[in-house]
Each structure stands twice: as C-alpha cells, then as structure tokens.
Amino acid sequence: MRQSLLLLLSLGTLGFSYLSAQTAENPPSAAEVRANRAVELAEQELQRITDLVGAGALPRIRIQQAELDLADARDEAILQRTLFGDFTAKAASGEETKEIVDAAQRRVDRQQTRLERARELIAAGVTAQSYILPIEEELTFRQTSLDLARLHARLMTEMAAASVPKTADIPETAIDDSDLFWQGMEHYEGDGVFAESRDLAPIELAFASKFARPLPISAEGATELHRALGFDHRGRVDVAVNPIQPEGVWLRQYLKLHKIPYYAFAHAIPGKATAAHVHIGPGSTHLSSRLAPHPHSAD
Image 1 (cartoon, rainbow, N blue to C red):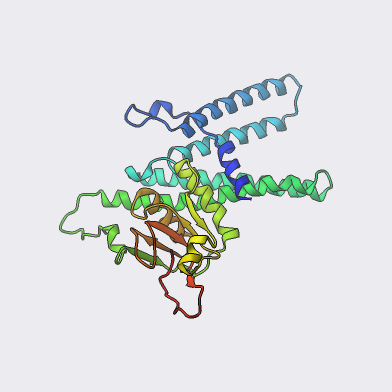
Image 2 (tube, rainbow, N blue to C red):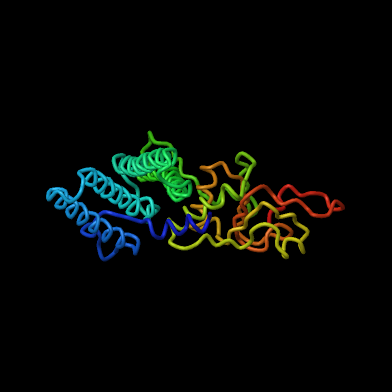
C-alpha cells in the first residue's frame, strides 16, 4: 500500500505553466517542470479530442473528460507551486491561501466523483472489483494533500501576520520554536494513538511530496538497537530528521495537524535518544519488568 502511494506520487503530478513567473533566483523545481509539460500535453489532448468530436469520430462526452483532466492538471500545478514548494520562505495574501485550499478541494471532489462512477460500474457488473483500488488510493493521496493545504494556508496566514510592522497597539507574539524543547526534547501527546498501518503511508507520501525524497525512517518497529537498550519499540517509528530544522519542523506540524503523538529530540540524550530524531507514536516502554517504565523513553 505504501509503495503504491509513493508510485502514484511520482507518476501523478500534473501542472499548469508558471515558467514565466520563475526567476534565476527562484528556478522551477523538477516537479514543476514536469507539471508544466503535463499541462501542455493535457491542452494538446483536449484540442485533439475536440477536433475528433467535431469530425464525428468520438462522442461529445470525451470532451468533458478531457476538460476535467486539464482542470485537474491546473489545480495540481497550483499545489506544486505553493503547497509542495518552498512556502516557508515567504508569506502569502488571503486570496493566495484560499487558492491553495480550493485547488486541493476541487481535486478531492473530482476524484470522489470518479470513485462513485467506478462503484456504479462494479455494481452493474461492467468491471471487476480491482478496478476501484487505484482510484481509492488516489483519493487518499488527494485527501492528505487537502489536509496539508489547510495547514499550509494557516501557516502562511500566520507568517503574513508576523511580517506586519509592529506598533504600540500590536503586542509581541513571536515565539522562538526552541522554547518548545525542554532539555532538548518536546513531547506532543495528540490523541495518544499511532496506527502504523493506517497513518504511516500518508506521512511518507506527504513528506515525499514536500521534499522530493523518501521519509528517512531510521527505525520501524522493534530493532536490535532498541532491544539492546531495553525498549519496546513495537508500533513506533523513528525518523532521522532534526526537529528544529525545516524537515523536522514540517513533520512536527503534520503530526500535530493529525493529532498523532510524538517525541522530538534535538540532540542525543543518554537513556532516551542516541541522536536527533522524531519518534512517532507513544513513548517506548521498557522490555524488562524489573526496570521501572520511563514516561519519556522514546528512542
């Protein structure tokens, strides 16, 4: 399931041409270049189908499908330019943040419609049950993107507000992120539950979408290191990112958005962490009943 989602990510990026808006200082990413090319192809395909429909070689419904594909591509381009771009470096207006969420919502709505049609075909015996699986996986990906778009919009709005010159009537509200860490560690309880089979694949997909590389998992479940240290690490995942660096900050924000518990370590802590990382899930308990459980044992 996880590999399928990541494959959809690598093959499913479409887009709209924004090359004219790029500068030498802010060149388009590889994903944006692919998106620009994809939308050009979608436009060409729409024109080709329109010509064939006009000649009576195809039914008119094919134009509607091509138009939907092009609209999907343009909305994906908005996300590639903003949601999956370097949004932490700048703020945005209210219109721009709304554009991001609206684009993600439209993609979810279109995929939901495709899913409903697929279910109708299966119920009518026209196609096999397996036909629906990739459609459901794509819907999961798009719903995750919508969640991230909403978080993204909130963060950009906060950044825009923080950039307004302060006056005597505007109280100081800036927060140093390092203050969240006590003795090099931050603990977020969330709803107290991390279901690896359900939650990990969307995290990996969202991370790969944002940073164009796999989530750097350093430990998934029980490992020799954790057993040697006496920790029960089953159902937990360690990610090798520094929580105060951009990738770690993004990961912590994602986990908070989804109320997933975690421990974040800014550096090695004897008896708790061997290096900076983010531990996803509740704290690890001790394997031996002879050792008293430590509420912060989460290496």
